[in-house]
Length: 127
Image (cartoon, rainbow, N blue to C red; front, side):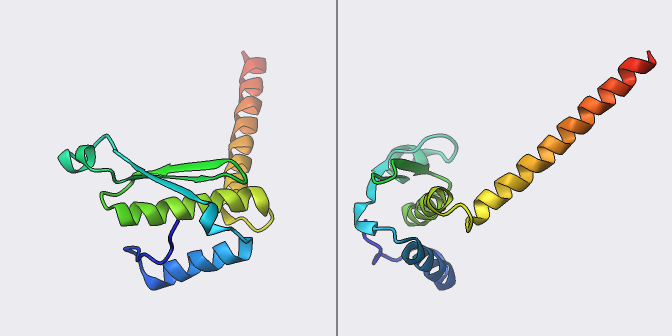
């Protein structure tokens, strides 16, 4: 993968992503990149052009596919950011912001389920 190409995002977002890649020690040359035809909403532009980006990182067997936008360059950036987040979740879970967000949501769901079960018990004894 070539990171010298410009992405259609701000400089600060690009720099933050590059710093994260260096911090995690990701070898960008090992990332395999494919462009495939997309699908779904978006009309002819989506269905006729290869703007869906697939990235594969062989050392950890992580694969990412992104087609959120119509522009290929923006999808490349989003896919790379997603791949780096996945790698960070696996390689360095203690620093992963995304993993912390997942854990917070999981904790909230567990709490809600517990309260719902307690509410069912209370209703069952009254009837």
